[in-house]
Length: 226
Image (tube, rainbow, N blue to C red):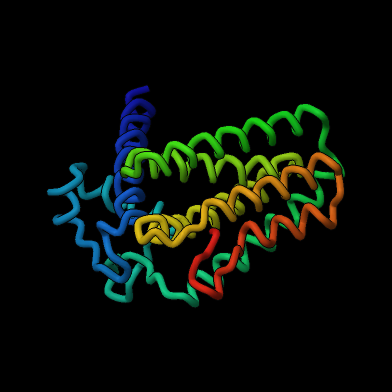
């Protein structure tokens, strides 16, 4: 009994630490390729040596942190090639999930797609009126929920887990573009609307094409919709 309780408390600590580090990696507080020393992280974020090491292992599994040859950790690099590879994998997974979902879904799923799209539009409107870190995170989570609901009807937990993994790896690129004012929200709104309309029309080819446009956007020009 005591062992289970202690383990539960440790898991809670690791979850809290992971959320804090994940946020700071996403916002660039912890920079790409920055070495992550256990003691320095503990002084900033708290936790024990063991809980911090478990946190870094968790983030390593998510692709945000890398283990080094010297048994240390560093923030994963964030190059243009990294982003292209992440988007490539994310798009492969989401295309498959959307195709399967359109075959297996029901009207309840359509309702969840509409609700997720509505929430995303509301957060984008709020963000355009007043940009701050809290609203940026709300917006990013709304983007995440919208992306997730598009593949959930595939009824494959592993596919959904993989989709979220690659989405989360793209988060810091997306937030960097937001900070730099390089996201075209008008274009994003049009892309989202086209995607939702194709999904509701059950037009698989049009939906997949709209998904590709929405995920990749005009990345080659530097105003990427990720």
